[in-house]
Image: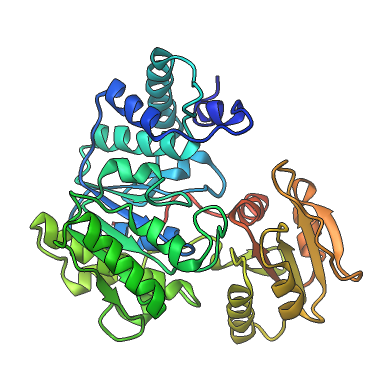
Length: 409
């Protein structure tokens, strides 16, 4: 089978009511006899990818070899495992996929206990690649969870927590505080550091109590206050809401270096590496013919608002918005914020997504899989692209944007 099919094989065949199995994920790692280097884990509701990328860049600036595991990808599944900021190549992905497939066959088919999720398998691929490349550290982004996420099995030495809000209500908890507690419990007995963004008072109290609980009181979370001047220079931070996540990543990297007993990088070296960093679909700017695009994976009203504010700072106007918001995202927020801007609404083909929310009659509706360069250039000189990572990744593919390299160390 194609290498990427290995990572989705059990997920595609899962039965009604089946859940991903942490015990099966642990059995797979034992079968492969892989442990990997120390792990910096990243959790949160939004901004995990940015946090992981900036943490990786800061660690690489300090001379460490870093494997980064994030998801979902933009243009290729290779992007889910990177070495020093660069996506692994096809041969490397094929090699780890073959090892995983052989071990999975030895385990036998999944039972009622659950299946191996793509998240678990890409994490395992990251550990195998880290072992092959002799990496010093892995930076691993969690899926949607924490305590119920495979990241917990990696026993992260340091945990970074991005902003937590009402995403996945009813799945991870019924309140933001319950969701935050679930995510905080990715920490465990081996955790030596926990770095979080400033949260609401209620969330902060719950998170700090959970960390104290699972670390027997050894670890007290460090709090990052974005814009305080304690982080890197603003000129090497991304625009918009991603800046806070970037500062968190840098702070988490410093904590990881301290735990590992490694010297921090010189400020000028950090600045040099961060100056090369590019975040696709995080207010990233691109050109297609005579059209400029600003692409952002905003999924709620605050994100849309920030993207519009940035667009109006860098452009004389916004000619068109190309968006994709499934029903479980903030469609009402998009309607309110985009107002009179001409909108094309794209629908993704994934069966688990619904696009039935009422939309303004003036909005044009297209199928995302049919989107072509000519469709985009016909929208005007300044096009704002917003929506889920699956969609913004599709747009990056259509315009042939660079996504393999995130930074140069």
